Amino acid sequence: MMKHLRHTLYIALTTILSFGAASCEDKGVIPDSALVNIFYDAMLTNAYIQEMGIDCDSLDIYEPILKRYGYTIHDMRHTVSTISQRKSARLSDLMAAASDRLEIEADREKHIIRVLDTIDNVARRSFTRDIYSDTLIEARRLKDSTRLFVRIDSLVPGEYTVTFDYMIDTLDENRNSRVEAYILRHDSTQVLRHTTMLTRYRESSYTRKFTTDTSHYALCINMFYHPRSEEAEKPSIKITNFNIRRVLPTSVSVDSLYEQQLNIRLFNHRLMMSFTADTVRPVVEPIIEQDSTLNHEPQDSLALCTD
Image (cartoon, rainbow, N blue to C red):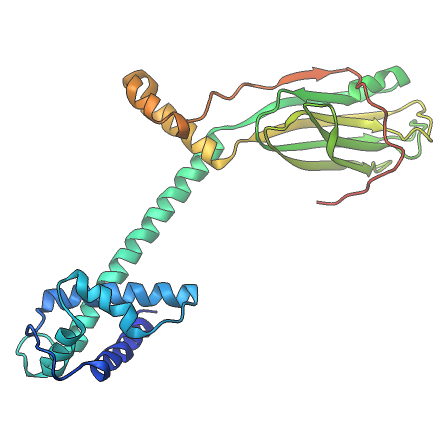
């Protein structure tokens, strides 16, 4: 990458030389330290225009860089044309010094990114919560089916993963039992609804992930769902390891981690107020309801979805 940038810069210098006017008065030779800075900025500029696919004349690119350090195209022309006579560094040495500086800064940025990624991962793990779990849920009679419905109210934005293992044995009198999971908005409309058929007569698992925002209010999981066209019969199902895990968005987790570690609110109220727009209100744990019924008509159609 750096070799490519140096090659591009060589081409640009050739262009500068060809456009220079011999009649213009030169300031003199540009010092080595200034040349390294100019080459450094030029390489960054080359990388940017190549990444963005910008097509522009070389003089338009480099003239503002030279002006920043108090030089002109003609100064650069004079310097490059006479640099072989200097007893200090050669042109290639100066360009190598600029590219080495870029490599050092690139390594530093990579290290910073790795640190930030680590902070992100630590923050997400630190504020991941199992907001609901149950080791065993059994339904052997029709009236037990209410145990197979779980509703989590007062959702906060984040990722919610529902998992459980189950076993439907030969005593179950249903043939097409399903699990349905969906999100309720504040106006009680269903969104992100997912239904799938339950496997019978062998141990199986279910997993479903939901990503919620501020418009979502409740997460509902019905492990004994039948459309209105099918009558539910006596169940015989065992649910184990039922769990709902919530992972907050990375930005929320990081803010919460900083607040926890630095305790900004206790140390400096004025500073805390100045960062109000960047901080996150304390996460309110959702309200969990079980064995309740929903005030909505079940849908007749079966929406089979896959992740």
